[in-house]
Length: 465
Image 1: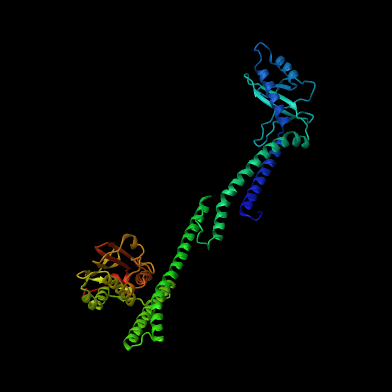
Image 2 (image 1 turned 60 degrees about the horizontal axis):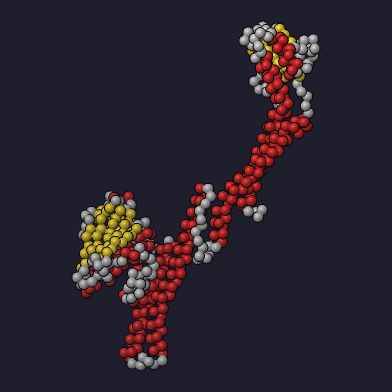
């Protein structure tokens, strides 16, 4: 408990509050020491006496009223002329003469003056209508520091300070909880992080703590997505390897136990084993490619690439397959396209994969068009087909690893392992580009690849072929 953040925050607040109250108490004590309650009460009595004299009946002489008031209030009343000479003194003959009060210093709190014997008097001065001065004075009370502390300071500070301290500590406790509780929830959630059921932390506290919580929740989401992706990867790779391994094991067993006893049967078994092992080999190579692209260690050799020439080479490579499938492949490029600084072999791999996919899902008499142009300072290369299209709910996932739009995973080798488009996306991202898909069921699919153009690309152009 004593090492918790909440306790430390509360203790910090408490120390600040106690320090502040201590400073206030010291200031109040100094003030009371210089101007105690008894002094203030005496000055109020002097002013009351002055008001009584000033509000007297006009028929009554000032000296008579002053004499009566002096006895009633037990104060000394002195009247000074305009030139500061004594006209009347209720203590005449009873106490040394009081000189006219000098101008008070601005920082001096108490109105004090001394008589001829050095006695200190508290006084109050008023100007009368006839421009004379009326001074009310009383000997300065003698009080001890202990009396000030006991009578003035202690009651004020004890009750006021105690209430302020309790309220301040309560508010400090609330504030410390406001800050520490969200952080504590983040700590508890972090300890549960390996668990798949770890939930986002409820946001609260000051803005900075909310920003931390928001960043933590984002991290939780990314980690959980990564864990889910890893689990799906293991499940998918297991599924993809299971089918060829089962075929290889089955036909190898047929050869071993003599079930394939004729040359044709053995040849067929060997052919299946060869085809399935080749399929596994391609899958392993794709996985290695993805791993290198993920780690940033893939071999990418950048050079100036003529995109129209590359697209024409890809189209020519698929000419036998397209003629057999009855699908027309065409290339359409804008005039004077700039060269792209990229890895030509990797881009050839990208568009070969995209055209291969388009051929698989385009029926006879369909068409595939490769188009290149410059839009908003980027090279846009699109591969459009008139095939069966992709469902809307599947379009956001077609670049995910092992994802196939046909959830029943029909098609076997024809549809592959679902790694091709994932590799395409990684290659494009490694070039600083992006890839997107537009598709409608029954109308076809268009894959758009955007590649950045470097400074030299703006002055170097490739003629359309």
